[in-house]
Image 1 (cartoon, helix red, strand yellow):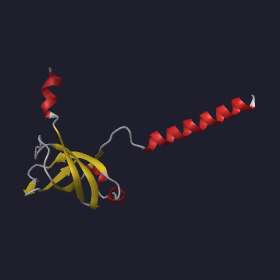
Image 2: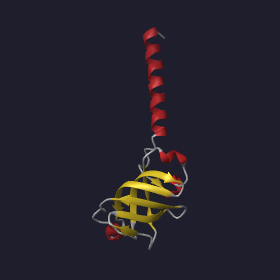
Image 3: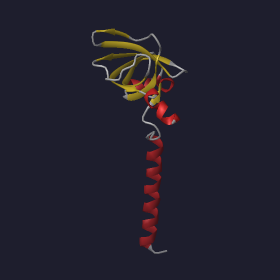
Length: 127
């Protein structure tokens, strides 16, 4: 094997290895983390995360633009606080995605909220 072919082979192997490592650490399968993945995890105090879950029935309260509710995935539950305007399709008993960070083991501070409306599409799937 000549010198140029050997360099090309080694370079390709290095690039393939770096690409594999990069893809395995980005969590590309889902941009969301579930409540049980975030609850109590110290790393989410300094890392912003999109957390998906169901809003616990009857837990939503509002004081002006301050919103508080419990979010669960059936395994863990976190209290979420948010200050601002709610999304147009907000359902206090529905599913949501909260973007923010953990400020205490049981408290998530959201800077943005997204409503998830799976029931809106259920009839279309059945047809």
